[in-house]
Image (cartoon, rainbow, N blue to C red; front, side, top):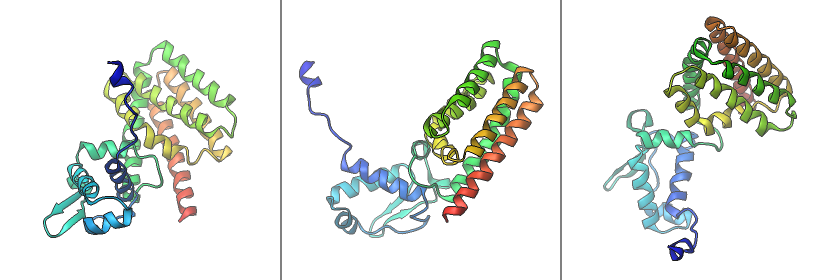
Amino acid sequence: MLEQLTEPLRTDSLKDVFVLRFEELILSGKIKIGQKLPSERELALQLSVSRPVVHEGLVELASRGMVSLKPRIGATVNDYRKEGSISLLASLIQYQKGKLEPELLESLLQLRMLLEPAYARLAAQNRTEEQAREFYEIIKKEESAGSRDIQKITNLDFEFHLLVAVASGNRVYPLLLNSFRPVYTNLSGQFFNDPQVTAAVYKYHRNTARAIECRDGKKAASVMKELLRHGETHLRTMIDRET
């Protein structure tokens, strides 16, 4: 047993690094749907790895529904909406670098708008007294956080939304939201650099907490929609500035 524990630790394999890089290129839209990739030989030369590494990486990408492999044709990027598997969804969930492909970003924003107001409505109906207090504890921490501590602000913002999901009483809602934490915080953290945005978010949080405390489901859902629209507006503004 001790001999097994003292075996050398290993970093990610070259195949895993290859897969991660191409996932990022596809999810960011830098490699387009339908685009044919260079041959295994060309990829191996460009990336300074062996052909078996490239082959194994492409096979893994194919298993996730991200590319199609055809003899004498090579690898072509799939339309992940039609071909993607649960493994691709897991890749999306873990995506934390760079920018998402525009249509994929739009889909995520639409998903939030569809689900989170429902969380808030149910939270107003089903929250416990302890959960009602927890909302204000999070808000207190937010307001005492330094404006430059973006990571802390981002984490507290996520905790607030997760508590809404937990308070809803639905067992699946919080699991779904918590699974998307990496991509969620990657997006929300991008606009907390603006103190005015942060102050507005805190105000929405207080109003949401108050509606949930008063068991006003209609108001809680309405405020949550306003909060999400506010976030989307500023996120889109930041993206437009960078393009």
